[in-house]
Length: 280
Image (tube, rainbow, N blue to C red; front, side, top):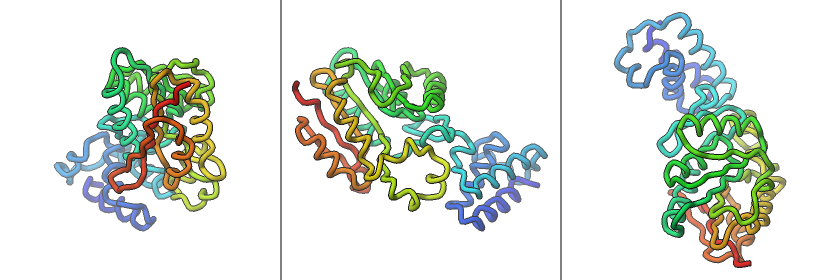
């Protein structure tokens, strides 16, 4: 089987299974099977696949038709220009979360001088904490309730040469009082009632603990907002990613915090909430 034939057949298999963007997905999976970049496929369409390569490719196609996300098959996802390892133990980083990074960078670069202390609550793959550590040189700590997810994040930090301390605990329970300048989090915010309406890839494969925020989706927001004043030092900031429809609740939670603002994403949807810790 040649590369060209493999791509045509793979794209058709994926299209028949109603997998989105079947041609691109076939290209990504074939690249993973033969360990090459996409440009190689177009430069060598007549190359014959080795037996082990088409066996791997066939398995990847089958996994994708069964709903397994492409990122969990390739174990890769790009975030803020860097490649991160992802497994079913961690949420797949989304492009929307880069808005959280941008908001944090603006605060860190504009509001603080001297050594910075950063906390990422619910680190998952570590994408936010690692990115901010590399971009700012801040002393970064990341908490994660799942030991398996923390292990994935630690591997990502080592791969990128980022200095991040990972702590396995429930939210901020292991973080000392007034020890942090900025808290950032992409918390679970999907209401449990919406479970069945989620895409199959999300509902059946991504970790429920990283997706669902209780019956209304607000449980983790409530807990972070309640404990953040204990953890933040004077003048510290809290930055939260907003799920769809969460802005009114989060704005109410932080209504007594100074300098509260809501920033939209490129589609105009409220995406990030920022606020400064109230004076004690």
